[in-house]
Image (cartoon, rainbow, N blue to C red):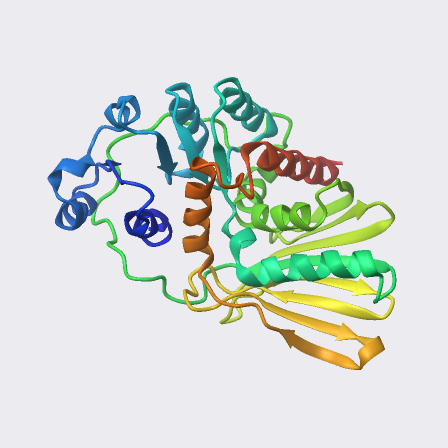
Length: 336
């Protein structure tokens, strides 16, 4: 689904690139792709696609356990790679991928599309300005939360496969070897859902955070406390069905607050909302203008920017490796 709604349309529409081929083996999806692209661009064998000399870059959206090995396959074939998150399931796996890209001088980008949301961009710029100007005083606390179990809305139109996959991709283990069996499921869910929120933490605090504590309950709800310098950062994640998407962040200062409310990933016409409380000017929950643009479309354009040398990826493989190390640190605290 994500390949159809969040990736392919934007590469097809961008005049800076040509979609040379797509690998897909499920007949119902193949039928739809052929109707849209013609038979010459749809292939059933991914290995043939990876080996083609006329392909410079590959966009990967595959079952999560196969993400790591298929990324490595593409990198070892000399292709630049954009891949859906999570990049891998352990920091060790992620390190192997980063080293493969670095050894071949390849662009390796990971799909954390929320960094491309205009509201997130505005919040980050506002946060940076307030930190430099100190007009709200010292930063006291930051909080990131994700309480959403489902998209809370229908995704854009796409073809739902009528059959299961028959091709079995290579896979890597989906949890670190030191993790206890009781935490395998919660870890996999956290990695898939909360890696976005960890990625936002490192986006706003790029010069390093460390984990101070973490706990999980039997329902998989996780509360972790991280630290940037002497500032505590709370991370809260739970599987909630509230009829709407509940995700965002807050930055609490001595004399004000910046709030960030993130929409469902499937909300094509929505961007994150940014609020400012500023005691000095009497602003209370002032909504900041953020502009427009769906984060998935902007993410695709940014990958092409990276390929053409205009700017590096917002989340490179190296940056995403840092997120994986932070996620493992959270779970080491949970293990005790």
